[in-house]
Image (cartoon, rainbow, N blue to C red; front, side):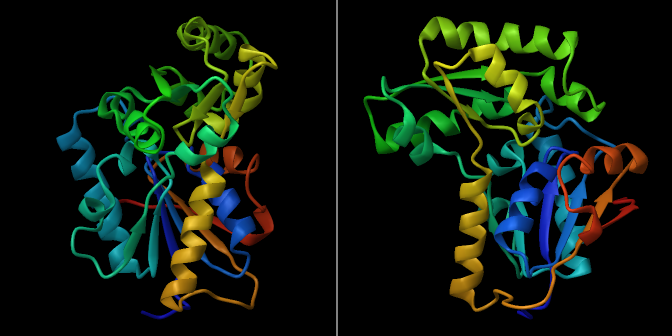
Length: 265
C-alpha cells in the first residue's frame, strides 16, 4: 500500500465533515478523499439492505480512486460492521468510535444517554459497547430522526432545532442521565443547542476525537503515516454542491479543501 494515497472518508451526507475536521487536525500531513452522499441522505431511517447497497456504491468509488484507509464518519454505516464494509477491498476500515470508554470516564451516576439515528438505536451497539466495559452502567438510547434532515438543510439553530432538542432530550432527562453521547456525526453541528437543552448538569460528548486517534494508530502501525507535507482534502458530494460547501465552511480549513459534485451510479 502506497503511503501517499489519501485516506477515504464516507458519510450519508454533510455530518461526516465534523469528523473530517478532527482528522485534519490529528493528521495534518495526510490527504483525504471525502464522499458525502447528499443525494440519498438520510440513511438512518432506511432498511439495512438499502443502506448496505448505498455503502457499496461509496466504497466502490473509493476503491477505484485509490485510498490507503477508509474512515467511516457515520455511526449508521459503522453499525454494519467494519469487516462487512471492507468487503474484500485492499484497504482497512476504521469505524466511528462508540465512545464507551469516554462516557464511562465522565459519568458519575453511570446513567448514559445516546442520541442517534433510529437505525443505530435499533442496533443496540452503543449499549453493548458500554455494558461490555461496565455491566452496571445504564444506557438510554434515543432516536432523533428530525436532526439529520434539519442539519442537511443548513438549519443549526432556531425554533425547529430547539423543538427537536426538547422532544428528544426529555426522555433522557427523565431517565436521569448525566452524560450524553452524540452518536451521529451530524449532531456536533448542533452541539451547542443540545448542551443548552440539557443544561450544565449533563456532559455532552463527541466520539470523533477517539475515531481520529484510532485512524492515526492504524496508519502508524501499518507504516502508512505521512510525516511531512501539508495535507489537502478533496470533498465530494453526490448532490447540492453549493449547500455542502456552505456547510463545510463551518467545519473545515477551506484553504486545504477542494469541492466537487460526483455521481456514484
